[in-house]
Amino acid sequence: MQRRLDGRIALVTGASSGIGEATALALAEEGARVAIAARRRDRLEALAARLEALGAEPLLLAADLLDEREAQRVVAETEAHYGRLDILVNNAGVMYLEPVAEADLGRWRRMLELNVLSLIASTQAALAGMRARRDGHIVNVSSTAGRVANPNAAAYSATKFGVVAFSEALRREVYQDNIRVSVIEPGVVATELREHIGHADTKDALNAWADSMRQLQSRDVAEVIAFCVSRPAHVNINEVLMRPTDQER
Image 1 (cartoon, rainbow, N blue to C red):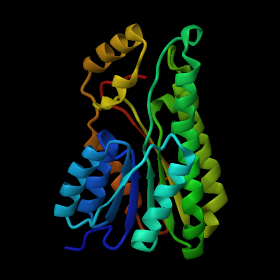
Image 2 (image 1 turned 90 degrees about the vertical axis):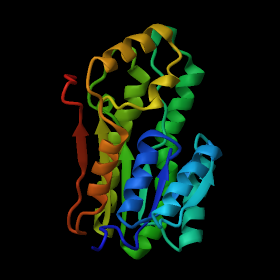
Image 3 (image 1 turned 60 degrees about the vertical axis):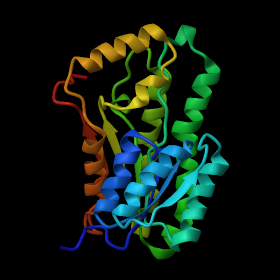
Image 4 (image 1 turned 45 degrees about the vertical axis):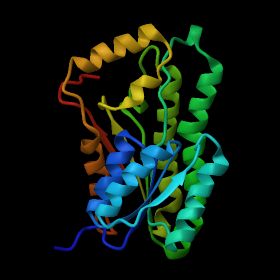
């Protein structure tokens, strides 16, 4: 049976754990060759071994994507290694939650740079090749926090609203080049993302809320991404909002 992404080249950022790791595996299972980028080389090496077993010919790219030059570099190295880049999954990000009045602005600045500017930089780096080939798909991972702004999540929501807005504006700029853009907005997912929260009371409250429901798993989100990028060329799934059944907001 032919796999839906045979011959396609993908780059997944934030691939050392959670949604990124699961997405790299899901794309490989569908036949894609997959480059994986993140800070933690040991995690990438473990993932690369699993991808190799699936025939994905992985390219390991250890990079701190907080630096926009690194975000551009991983795209350039993927293109140099495989000859092109068909699918870019911008998944790298952090979630720092705390009240505005007590916010660590340095921490929030880093979140804005990683969640938004790094995503923009890697997208920009991928566009020239995709336009030249008139083919490509960019997937940006946002959040339900990009739809609903809650207390203690002001800056995080600002980044994720920004990802949604950027994705739609980008889509309208590049659709005539046959480049597709999808934004994925998951609700509560059982990943290590919540470990980044530095404000103890907010972290405890969020974990208690998450533990009260059947959370999404990384694989659930990865399967949605694989579905989006495997549609026929005339189909662009622009936006997917997904929550655990038990999540109200």
